[in-house]
Image (cartoon, rainbow, N blue to C red; front, side):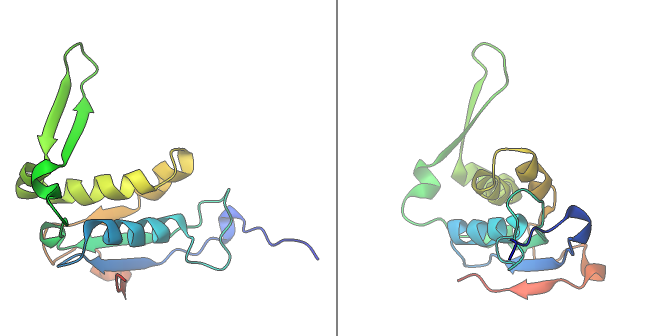
Length: 143
């Protein structure tokens, strides 16, 4: 008996909605990354992009446990000498809560072409409204 390998043209994508209101950031990110990778499917194949599309709503209501809101810092570099920028997560949560969720999910995806393609299927919204009503997304409960 041979091992089943999913082909790229046989991938059937669905849309899922995750409500982040009152949920921990890490648990929301793990759930989204698992669906984006396709690891929730029985026909998961590691070398094929077989993941689904994910919509995360209520990103502004996501919870960080402990003192992470005051102590955790996001760093990025401009590429120039002395170009290291540091932003506290409390500032990010006030200004761009979508970025906080996106960064958490991106860190859990593979660092290759498959991860980049998976990350492109993530949509994060600040409030409860989203633009993908026509895709009839399935609601996913975060454990």
